[in-house]
Image (tube, rainbow, N blue to C red; front, side):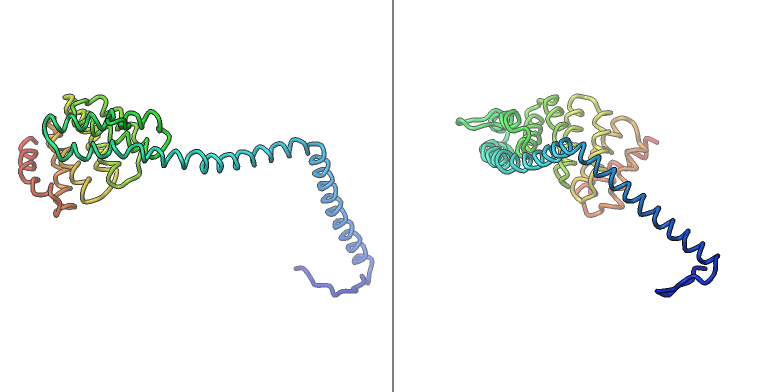
Length: 256
């Protein structure tokens, strides 16, 4: 066990004197090692000072450049893109309220533009790096879907990125709708199931669980259909889709 030695303590015998000398020697070696290490570091810094300053300068320039880009280029571009997309959004909203040929015409105007204003296609092409450009992919995909341009809908919606609780699963499920229209129910089922898994809410989850169940029945997979329908019944009993579960559940069970 270590013992505490008072200040001013002097060794009283040879053993203690020898221990004191060794202790002093060890301490000196430690400080000498530290001094030597510090000297080597200083020498290395001195030799590489030019390169160190270059690295620091590049890092600082990159940070300042990014901040300048965000403030003077990206932010104004975001505002410009949002402003340019306003008319296309108006066409899209009006198309949802219309029907038949008028609806198709408005969706096409939303895609290609009108009255000298940009459509979603122009926004995607000219402002692809902005939030508005990303959102335009969603709108364009839905417009393509509503005008029976299914392959274009799949491509646009597949490029769309979002963390939103509603838009993200809606986009994924809409890809399933497009595949179903292309008579590819296997692909559609996969996208419906993915859309149902993406977020857990009372709107999109039961919506795509039901679509997945109906598609599974079409494919003859009663077990998968029953699983999706049972989940709607137990987890989302207040949803609109829950009112349709019993009809499809009977079909699914008779297939097994």
